[in-house]
Length: 581
Picture 1 (cartoon, rainbow, N blue to C red):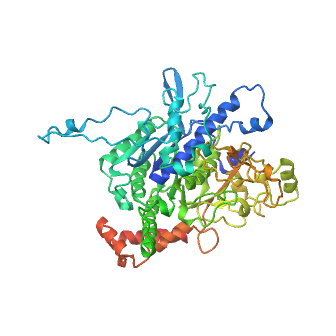
Picture 2: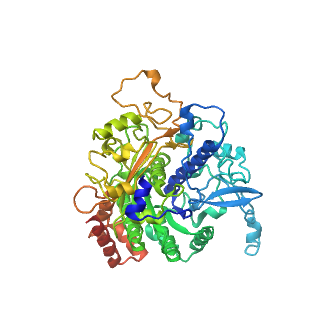
Picture 3: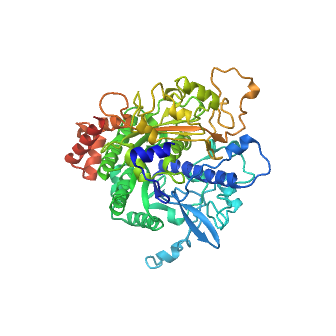
């Protein structure tokens, strides 16, 4: 038993209630977060379906609906209202003002006073109010509102605790009907869970589509402002809902001002909760999504270099805070797309974020199951001391061979699961050949043979097995997940080999959604030096802060405007170089 091995070898204690708080800062971070919470909502629905009595169903449907066994108290807090127990995410998200679009918060307060009342004491000549039209809601959000989720709380369950963990959306259209790929404007257009005021803060000093908020230092300048006070107050209230906060997940844009504001928030969190584990997903959106207008040539190069320049300062703050695991996920570094996802548009934040969220959902599963180990212990065991950089690879779909065939290959010592054939490197940090003891392999919708057999021709190190997990249930895909799968992927997520000759009628129709999918992640510590396993993102940062940057006009202007001394730049340069080795 893998969990028993973890307890024996790494002394990872089991825990019943160790809460995890999620912080999301930035537009692309919230794209990733929206997909992640949609997974959580879908998993809750599957748990309900698995526990509910069923008169008749075939084995495939039963397996697809099987519960995963998640401990929802880790990521959600329980609230009772009107005799009904509800679950709300332990979440604080931050974005620019206006980022919510047409979405209304579930328990929004009274509207702001009319302009006439606010200006009455400062203007003697009367006022005229011009009301802008409300941003229209996405059709998916309109359908969610029509479903009337009780008191607008997500995952309503019966007071007995044995009822529905989430209401399934009866009669919903398919993703083809919603056409998310063409109609999504922001992350709020496809977020399934209702947001509460206690979860959201829109920056007063920065408006969506108006203020650039382009540099790390713009975010750090929010220290001491009303925005900082409001966000820290939300985080403090989330602390109060926890019996014992054990870890903090941070998803933050690393290329702009949200990297600087994440530094402000995390420093306070570390002071208040110094013993909790810390996992940081630093994300960077597709290049086309981060620019305000099409550009070419040197301006393109300068904008890209400026983004890595900001990311380098964000990385220094991460090192100073002593995080356990830092995973840089920069979409511009992706050089290909997964073979099973030929229609994936990596220039779309909605589609690219779905892969990152899948990686986050799967990789964190070992400490989110009922009776699993403490999150902080798992994260601290994942990386060597003072070396938090990690790589993350995703297999979507993961290979799902028949159990008998898996066992036969395992007995023969053949490679059952070759990462080179199935994994897509989300972090541009290749895994170390021959096995990395600081790694965690998670397989969903698989059998133990895939974990115990050779991995890419080499056995998985014993230490890595203790941090790894095989779960029989595949990952359920919500209707909001981009359907970019090859026709050779069935609606149950099974991938036909490319060499197999199959009749056209056996392929999945384009109008049919892939409803569940076996997945796998390989989360591993990065290596140092010139060998394999180096982090490409750190290499880009090192180039962006190289000596002589003060002579480049945009860099000199930024450093002068923000009052950055040469010593601080040198500190960043040395920190990045040390982590690269």
